[in-house]
Length: 103
Ligand code: SF4
Image 1 (cartoon, rainbow, N blue to C red):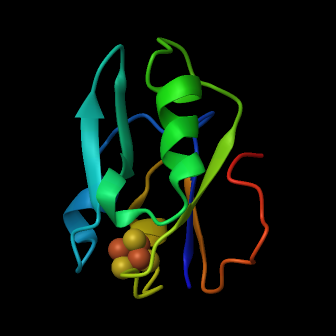
Image 2 (image 1 turned 30 degrees about the vertical axis):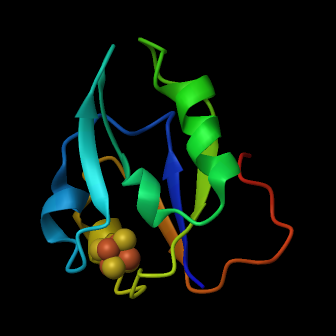
């Protein structure tokens, strides 16, 4: 199952990944700052959703963490990775069981 990783020390919310994803499982959000993220109900490991909300969403500055999102619908096509102007994304085709949601 693909692991879609966002690096929030780099993401600036350009939304390029959202535009190119063929299965529309990503979104751009505006809170204290603009960011991109997976759509919550498309993420299987709920600790990743919680990590986004508790560690990233309420910060007005870049946060030095990566969040791993276990996404069953992801095709691992890498379009999002190629489109990101900040190199803030990574996709691993196989999410390893027991892997931490945050690094
Ligand atoms: S790898 Fe492809 S399917 Fe998966 S999130 Fe990125 S653009 Fe979407």
